[in-house]
Image (tube, rainbow, N blue to C red; front, side):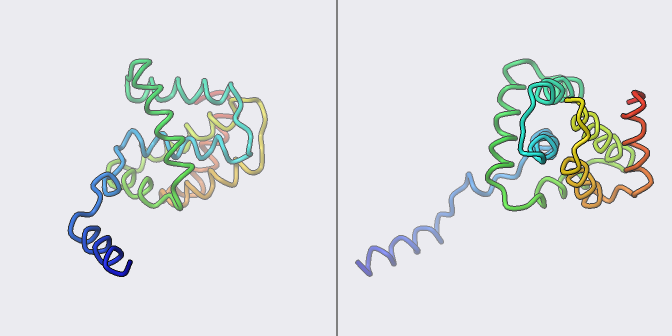
Length: 151
């Protein structure tokens, strides 16, 4: 028994699993953060899922099959991840400040796609905006633009 446990740890240290070390793509990181907004109020509304699909299509130009796969992977990542660090750090690394502000605006569009302003969704967007180092004034500006229908 002890020998089999030792073999397990020796093998795990010698050959770490490669699939656990794969970093998410920028598309997956973006989709995952947007999925975080959808699930913030513990209710997935079909209007929000449609809006997410449209946003991902417009942003990345993906076809239907690739969109379905990306959305499924993003939802799975959000369900299994402990924190947002891997997604946020990738986005901060590749998106400049205006692009991060645009992502926050997308979050607001997604949150309000169901016609309901839920405080839990606002709280989640605020948290993500802070992690993305988007200033509070730009967070509010994005919210107001979406509410006014300008985004």
